[in-house]
Picture 1 (cartoon, rainbow, N blue to C red):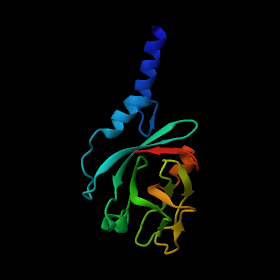
Picture 2 (spheres, rainbow, N blue to C red; picture 1 turned 60 degrees about the horizontal axis):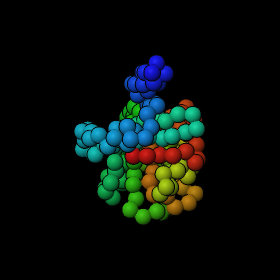
Picture 3 (cartoon, helix red, strand yellow; picture 1 turned 90 degrees about the vertical axis):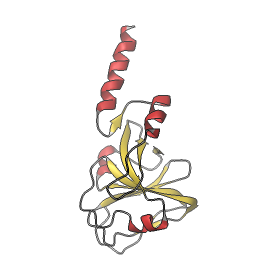
Picture 4 (cartoon, helix red, strand yellow; picture 1 turned 45 degrees about the horizontal axis):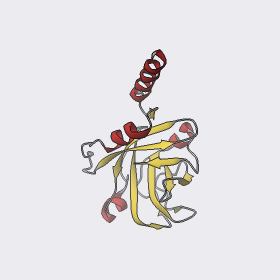
Length: 163
């Protein structure tokens, strides 16, 4: 009984940490589905998790669902909190290509396959650059987070993303 209580206390303590959760299973799925208010930009926000070999890292991300929202992306933003980001879901898998035109802050751009695994990560992209940042294969989703966070959290190709 004490082991169960200690495990429960540890799970609750981990869940209170920003950006890193110890929860798995039904509890994790339920917390991902909890409704969030719209962002300041008016976009839907969802909870997203990236599971590495060592931990599960939590983010709240804005959903760029429409063509116009995807074209705008994070342009003109001057800050992005470490546990925030933007996700770009595509109706069909495609080769993804992004640029940093009018993007003030550097980003890590994470390309995600339909099965939720990370295909590749373009780390520390250069603000205002017109150079294309591309996936290596067709992907279903792209995630943008603050530059350096992917390395800081140990994110790598093959890790799993759920949202």
